[in-house]
Length: 116
Image (cartoon, rainbow, N blue to C red; front, side, top):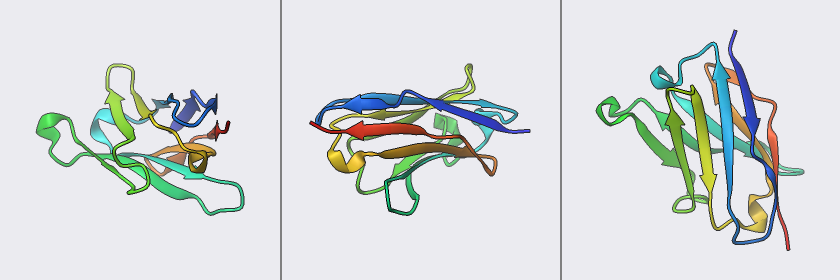
């Protein structure tokens, strides 16, 4: 049974940073594609970032939605079986519940609020 538990959300001012964590059990992150999504109030859930198994010789490859490219970084810690989303230069439009996904399962989400 795959379980994903997100944490690290919170409230920050525009321009601030947060690091989200997703602790995974029942699925080795070193051998599976992992994803971050987000859902803003009144909007559909949207893809944010993926860490795929392309180019496994360098530990996979991260790809990003255009809206977060250059500001967000997704990476894994295989020893902790955890994936992270480092979010810098946050904007009010980044406000959403952020979800981790892997192995066809979703986490419960963590709220990120960017407001002055």
